[in-house]
Length: 78
Image (cartoon, rainbow, N blue to C red; front, side, top):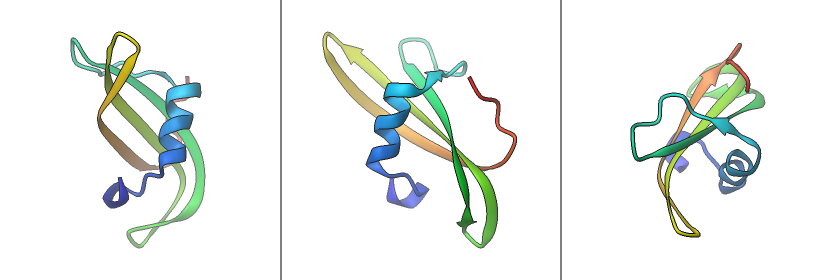
């Protein structure tokens, strides 16, 4: 998470308020959320950060497989 600039609170927000990721592989679920960012990441200024969480649900347990972030602007929302 730290290498990708993602905070635990952002993952929680994605899981609670995000929309379904269209690119999740079969058997895996995914959710996406776009955050306002307006800051620098790796030397470049970006207005938004898109966070995607890929996970599996086994009964009532949620297992996070991976989380990715993209920095930029104009990401599709919802």
